[in-house]
Image 1 (cartoon, helix red, strand yellow):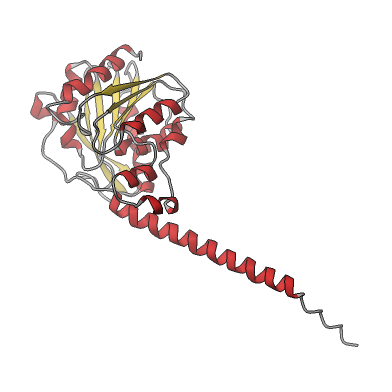
Image 2 (spheres, rainbow, N blue to C red):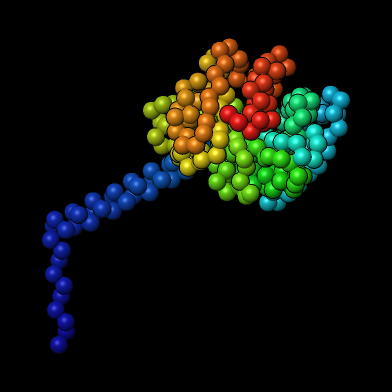
Length: 289
């Protein structure tokens, strides 16, 4: 005897199935759309600086220029030693920057008795590969390992992020081992999504669709290490309120050094460099905010 035929689903149930399938399709399309948007913005977000010729040696300071691996890419680094036991600083630089831009800074830090390590991300300067969020995450971890390797006797180890570097550094800082003794953030942004809006890469109405891999507010809430933040009230690229948001979000010791009239790139501009670095040098040498 053949089995009885299944009863047809009630109309309401069929409607529910159709509706659920429709919502799943919309969710899938939205997810794909967010990914496509993210990839498009990611390609536009990074502006790698070509390699320059300046080195700390050109400013009277001996340096070690070397290459190290990050995944299947080779990154370039520059190390200047003040003395084996001097405080040491690892720099995560900004967009449109490279080692050559930081050569005079390394000379300035050397004169103040501070060792420094700077590196170029994938695709920046003479480093190979192309920049992406994933690659810069790998680059940051590889660079920090190099930094610790060349400064084994330093009295204290610090990390510093400038502009774009704030996202790169805060993305990995919880995974740095041994942990740094403190952090410096210059001209940092509160999130990559917010930065994409203020720099005009994404219209505000579309920002909700953009993934936010570098949410600095979220990351800084998890930190207890001392943090010195520096930002100009007239920063033409990243609003000063971003620094205020970061300072409020930090749970550990922190201090916000507010400048009245410095440009966004004051850290590497000769006319403003001394003013920008004075509070940083004081912090690195004393270990106190």
